[in-house]
Length: 304
Image 1 (cartoon, rainbow, N blue to C red):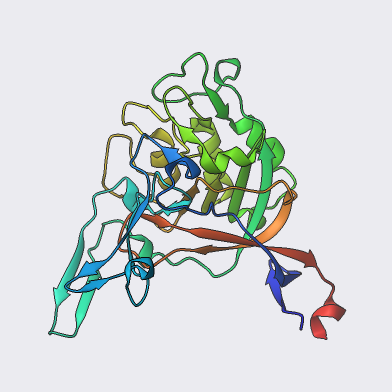
Image 2: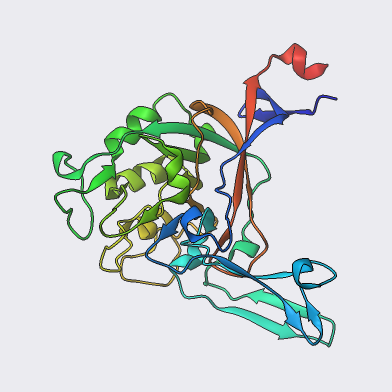
């Protein structure tokens, strides 16, 4: 059986092969800290058997089934997707209507949690590969100022890599940094192991091109130690620097997915992406971005 669907994007018809997909998520090995990626010296993700009265959720200890309680920091322990609530005050109100009915309301002028975002099932997506450049050799900027050894993804690099994609094809953008090694899946990022990040101009370029969903293999689009400014996050969602309130210009339905891994077997090009997240009323959650191959098709093929 062949699972294929046809999609029209701005007058161009594409066929998506649902049997040819790749996950961009890093698998989390609970209780194996050296097998997990780590950011900001966070505690490792862990799993412990649930215990309640005479029950233990571990078949090795005599339990009838395995039931683990998980401890995880979505931002620091693996692939995760963030909403605008990551940098804004959250004001989710829960009204208890009865013993069985709970209504969660989004207060006006407050950011959306992941559970409230309207993320399409399939999003046009380009995958590009970029070798970060030395920041001080560029004419671009960041707040706070660049350090001597900072490496960045610049507007110049992005503009070149995205030049042959239309804005419609760039609704989502996946960026693979080079060199691309599998050790990224267990990388511990720290002040001594500072990864690349984005310049101000790079993020503004993504906004100009209409990128709604950004996926990167970096732990953050901002510098690891940036004095708490989070310049690029603020620019991406159009939140004033130093402010934690949305405004009329804020881009509330956009997402950032960090700590992905794009295998070298996946070639640069145009795809469709499905960003899978749990329905958490939180600013971020572990996620599983999945890309699907696609091909242009003619009118005769569409009518079949």
